[in-house]
Amino acid sequence: MSSTHTPPQTMGQQYGRRSWAEPWKIKMVEPIHMVSREERARAIEAAGYNTFLLRSEDVYIDLLTDSGTSAMSDRQWAGMMLGDEAYAGSRNFYRLEEAVQTYYGYRYVVPTHQGRGAEHLISQAVIRPGHFIPGNMYFTTTRLHQELAGGTFVDVIVDEAHDPTDLHPFKGNIDLDKLTALIERVGAAQIPYVSLAGTVNMAGGQPVSMANVRAVRELCDRHGIRIYLDATRLVENAFFIQEREEGYADKSIAAILKEFCSFTDGAWMSAKKDNLVNIGGWLAVNDEEVFDLARNMVVIYEGLHTYGGMAGRDMEALAIGIEESVNDDHVASRVGQVRYLGDLLTEWGIPIVQPVGGHAIFLDAKRFYPHMPQDHFPAQTLAAELYLDSGVRSMERGIASAGRDPQTGENRYPALELTRLTIPRRVYTQAHMDVVAESVKAVFDGRATTRGLDMVYEPKYLRFFQARFARR
Ligand code: P70
Image (cartoon, rainbow, N blue to C red):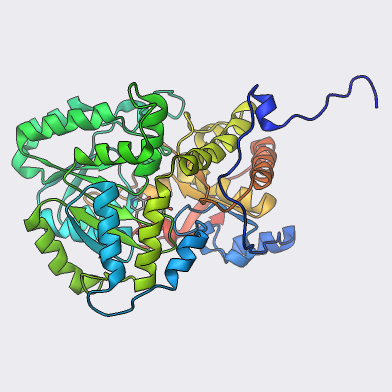
């Protein structure tokens, strides 16, 4: 060995600390394999350059989403055997109801098949035509349900959220001045609720501080406005509060989660994320009148109010998943893995949204492809290029996702043009993250000659799911 040889270092050693590892070991495995470059080229063309239209068999490492893609624990699988598949009054529903009440603290629970089912119920229950719904950045399905109920979404997130390089520790915060200005402009009576998301998906998984939700509560109390929470990734939000906000370092994730919820009037949940199940959701509120409406409506759209579209076994796995999701070691390792990938890319000078959020790395496609106009779909292009390079599947979160303004029919041009590498919970290893990082680097190194895409088929609703593209 030559004298210039440097011994390899573990991740911990590179950062001058002891390494940590996941608080689980693997009991069952699912084989995956990489298809050839020719097959990938064929597959992405057949998919119209839209990663939502790829077959998962053609994917090597699937970072499309963290939704419904987590690994369940042995306890959850055991719970599946305890499914009580009664049409009405399933024992598993009462377990789920109790878990939501215990960990989130709301009084009434309505089960739904997934998050958008709950968004539909709350939107139809409280939004009337002409209403305005302020929120900390839009989410695709959330905003569409608000619009379909006759409302207009108004973005009141802090300006920092729209700048991928700003290092603000709580880029998910609501700007109280923007919210006050909206209340003064349209009147509190026209605002059925503030739509607050814990870790803001479209901003890069950015958290909301406890101080902010407390202040929003005070403001809303003065005007008699409710606050409903998108609790989809609120556990991860609690982690950032524990890490970054004064006075919370010694509080548990569970305690922080419950305190946060206490400032709100209810929440909708895509249980496919934080709650560690493959399917499921819920709506929970404190107001009995809103509950009555939602519980009545659930039987039209989802199923009886004690299953809401889930099987009994799904509700049991969900009740257990809620308990597991607030485990401090679990959350630290989950966010730690996302950060591991983010640190590699940051060190290599690849433009990503900073600070790294809770569930994903968001590549900044505008800075990745500075030569490409937004009309040529840089983030969509980047997702296709990554797949071509290595079979890694990611998701566009830019102009295709933003869709068109329902009034004018014009394209919306979001400030953020991002490609999301979303990490499922308890699924991939550090070695997978290394493969992903190297692929991003390879695509980055080849960026100068990359050309964009044209949209050749555009569906009316949530176009990004089914749109088709062609190479320019
Ligand atoms: C994702 C998924 C779902 C989601 C969410 C937040 C903050 C509600 C929902 C809806 C799936 C998805 C959805 C739309 C576009 C792309 C991907 N997010 N609120 O991958 O919940 O899917 O259960 O109906 O993130 O981010 P659900």
